[in-house]
Image (cartoon, rainbow, N blue to C red; front, side, top):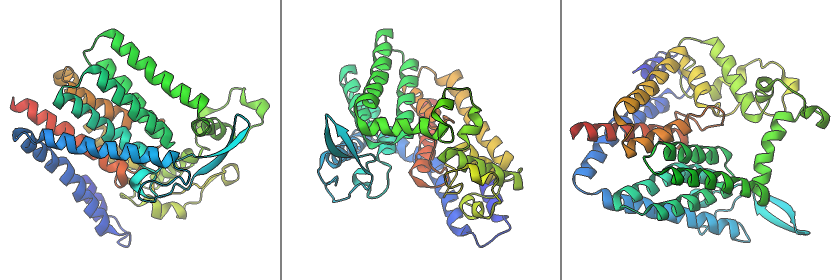
Length: 368
């Protein structure tokens, strides 16, 4: 209701308000309709066919992405070609490798996020519905992780890593299994960063972004981390969203208005910024909410998350399904990473889907 009011009453009627209202109604549909659909599927034992269908599609995406990586033309089976190719010297031989993969998603670089979210959820559902052994579950988790790292999507690697670590810590399993999974995940990632040239470049970029304006001799010195972060490709977007929030601090500028109004800003400190300070969205859920829904919208969002976490701790902390959902939610909201748009894109749709999945589990448990 708050999103509807802030956008209907927004003063500029030329900013495609109809499309924005459609997105809002889509979010409402996801949150209130999908839980009912899941309850119906669960009661009629469609959960088996649904799980098989979802996991089959995940396997297809995994295999197609691997094929794209090893194909000499870097095309998937549909002919979609990744456009992020680099040359590397490996054992004194120059080879070409893709630094980002797309799999069957065309020119959208979302395959890593898809596998880190829907992929992980499908593997978990397969384990729960068909009672997979812990060993097979572990193999599927690591195989999925392998492809996510290959995709070159750093934020997806962070989401997947955090979700696995948090969920395995909360699951009531033996301590040696927790330790094994933790060290396997971390070791697997470090091995990739060290041995795979594309992964090494993707993660080395982070150090470069934080230190691009320093001499090598100065990098080791203590620096203003916050100032440096706001000069990274993502930080510049966060900074511009903060400036937009200052113009309407209470109610915000309206959803999906960041991309329209950012270019009108008189951006400060332009000479010290290497990257564009405007994009389609701020690439951070919290800055997006702050700029587009204001302090009121951000407060309501935190209220929803607080209520979910409170219910989890008080009622559902021993429920495996709820542990997985809350782990994914915490990983998605981890603030020190770039993210997709909350009110559009794959990233936003999955966030609202996981909220709907939480409501489904809560209703199912309360009915029992």
